[in-house]
Length: 444
Image (cartoon, rainbow, N blue to C red):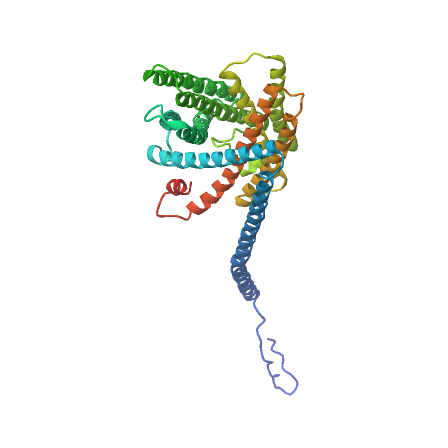
């Protein structure tokens, strides 16, 4: 902007002026461009995310269906093989396992469905613990009473007795069928009642251990009361116990022993899992996904060894303590057999969850667990059958081996019920015109 003039007295022409870009304007333009680019990236991710999620969901569904197809076909082929073996004893065990599996499968589903309806009617979301315990105990007593009355009616002790050899044989078959099924339902009702109580005791392993002998004492006392009732009914008509009444008495006693075996063994194994892992599972024996997949191999091995120890100690007792008790001895045998079976099931669950299903839950995991437990249990049944054929084993040892076989059958049924439970929950969650409990009851 100087005032000097060029020679000749004229001023130089001013050059055209172009203002320099302002720094603030450059920053604004740059930020706008970055924002547009970021928006484009977000839109692209938003459009791609559903496709990725859908692809992952479809892949997971395909995996579940594939495992279900191969597993179910393989399972059925294995059953056909077992029930057509040349060995008569193995064929017999195979049919016993199938019977126990179907019974426990149906029993758990029916109990859970009825229990779900009872909780909907009598309990809310925030029902106090004492009320939950009361409802579970009453539910157990209702099933226990229904068991007694149903078997009394089927046997003819209450109502028309069977006439003739054919009716007597038909009655015995019906009595055995319903005794097993109702006994398993009552057993899971007892598990629910005493596991609910176990959740409310102080969180120490010795406090949770106290629940097992309490359950044994309570169910044993109920059995003594019903024993006196059965004797009174049998002698009330003619002063004698006929063949039908004797069958009613024997089947009911055996069923009550099964109830004790289920309830006491489950509470014992709940205590063992709590002592090993430091976390008490819920009423149904379930843990959180994080806890289930965090168990070490040492903890898994410890739980399995505890189950094997039950069977070994029972064998030692039989060898060195020859004293027999009419009710206590078969009850102890059932408790030992079922404790071994529960330990085998939950240690298998811990192992598979820790090594193969850390990030996978749901149907695929439950199905693989059921197939794994089935394969292990069937292999053990073959080994136990061979052990029973040895000349070195006496009748008492053979009784324990047979009880373990029946326990393994219950184990297989429970594993498949867990698998089916996941499937039922997935279906009933999408049924909106009836409650999930009612849907489950209908499917059961």
